[in-house]
Image (cartoon, rainbow, N blue to C red):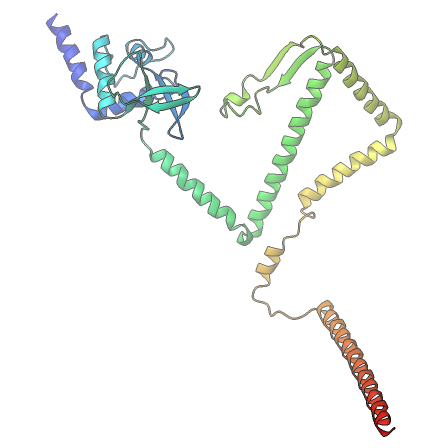
Length: 327
């Protein structure tokens, strides 16, 4: 009994250190930790859980989770509550009150209570986050310097972008075609059904690979309409091969132009290559300048003719006035 009591006291003293509490919080906030919910508190998205859930998880984690070897197991509920109180004291978690659905507010009561809700403040080691922020800033600056990139790097990015665009286009088109083909028969068949689900992570978006279930009732007329449209398109493609072949050839030529880069001109690269060359006017520039000067001369002659005509009119008026005075 004395040995067991000494072990329990040693485990309790282990979690009195803030450094060891940080290790415990790293485990609790990992994917192996207790399930948390998301909410908005003070205009910031946070994660929270109930105090009872946190205490229960410290005592008995999920069956598929292995407790870290470097952390001693928590033996009693009193010990788990004491650790939670210490987490509140050092502000790794704080007590929150629910205002509405998805809304939290900081509670004035700072004591730990298993019936209350607690929001995680502890963020763990931010070295990786700072590193990724630096990489993001460097990547942004690197992209803004695109006009001065070497030609081979521009060509590589161009081919990569075009290939990715074509892959996404064919992926979406093929998913839709397969779905329509099976949906007409009365079943919903999706390849990568969660691919465009914004609420899932990157890995979860590719799970499951396929989904297959029976179509809901009341869609028979829509399936018939889609079947007629698909059949009409197939009939047109077979009976009008010249028009369909022209459409297909146009798509092939468009893809070739994309890879050849003929749809966009690289003026920045040309300006960079000619930066040390003297700027000599081209023949087109000289002709354009000559045409503009001719227009100016023609405009000057017209103004001169108008001025002479005005002078003649003024002289005639003066002669008439002189004759009137003589009479």
